[in-house]
Figure 1: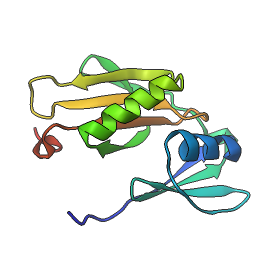
Figure 2: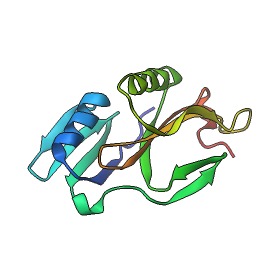
Figure 3: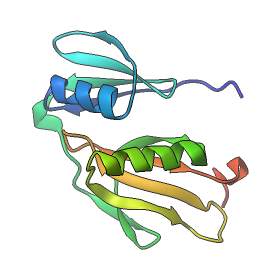
Figure 4: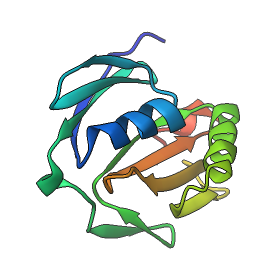
Length: 139
């Protein structure tokens, strides 16, 4: 399916940390950059880490299926195989999860594998996967 790509700019405290995390740990190819920002290819979408140390970290959460989900977060929907491989990679490098890899809404519309973790600047990321893509917007 051919869908529009999104663009997201977000604050980081240190560009070298962002480069190591997004490029190294998550495997996002790097695009253009300057002394103030770095573009990354985030599964076909453009994300931009902007140096803005005073703007970092998440604070507010909302309850979702028994977990406290960071309100401000971003991520991507992967295939189950990609999600499982990423979860294993993140565990292997010692990632501290905000919400451990798990299946949310078991047996309900929208059942999904999900995990939340923070980048080095405290930005919350969610990676999820659905066994059935028809469940992405299920109610």
